[in-house]
Image (cartoon, rainbow, N blue to C red; front, side, top):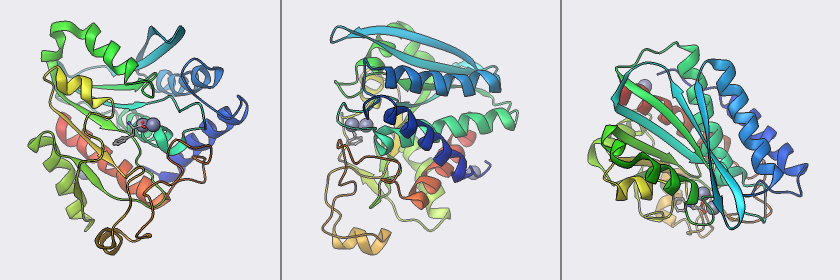
Length: 276
Ligand code: PHE
Ligand code: ZN
Ligand code: ZN
Ligand code: ZN
C-alpha cells in the first residue's frame, strides 16, 4: 500500500477546525457544522470518482445523516467497509474525536482512487452521523442492511487515531483482522496492545452485534498512560492519552502528527491487503 502524506490528513483536520470555528465551535449532530463537514468529505469523494450516498435519519428531533462511499468494482458479496464518525460532541470541534479517523479514511479512500485500485473484494467507506448520542447513525445503517450484513467481509472502525499522548491499540474482536494491523505495526517496530477501553463504545458495535467481523485502531481517550506504556510509546506516563477528550480543547492542536501518520498508513495497508 502507498504511504499516506500526513500533510493531507492534517489539511482535512484544518478544514474541519475552520468549519467548527465558523459554527459556534462545534460539528455536533443537528448543527450546520455537521452538515458542512459532510459536504466537505462528500465533495472530495465525488471528485475522485466514488459513488456517494447520503442516508438520512432522525435523532433527538434533529435530522442526521451518514455518508456512504463505494469504490466501483470488486465482489460486492465480499465487501470490506471502513468507517469513522463525523460528528463531534457539542462541547468542541472534535478534531481527534473523530476528525482524525474521518480524515484518515478519507485520505486512504483518495489514495485508492489515485492508485486506480482494482481490488478483488468491494470497497466501501462510511462517515457516521450522531455517534456521540449512542452510535445512532451506524446503528441506523446496519438496521437498513437487513440480510445484506452477510455480504460483509469485514468492518474496520477508526475512532480517535491521533491522540496527543498516543497509544497503539488494536481491536481484538476478530483474530484475522487483528493480525493484519499487528503485523503492520510489527514491521515498523511499533508496539501494540489489545484495545480494551472501547469495547461496545463505538460504531463497530452494531456491526459486531449483526455478526460482521470487526477490527480497528484506537490511540487512546481518557484512560491514563502507564509507565510501561510510556516506555513503549513515548509520551507522558500518568496523563490521559487525550486530556481534551470530549472537551472544547479537542482542536487541531490536539493531535500527535506521528501517531496520525502511523495509524493512517496502517489503515491503507489493511485496506489494500484485505481487499486484494
Ligand atoms: N466512541 C468514543 C467516543 O466517540 C470514543 C472511544 C473510541 C472510546 C474507542 C473508547 C474506544 O466518544
Ligand atoms: Zn466521542
Ligand atoms: Zn469517537
Ligand atoms: Zn502495506
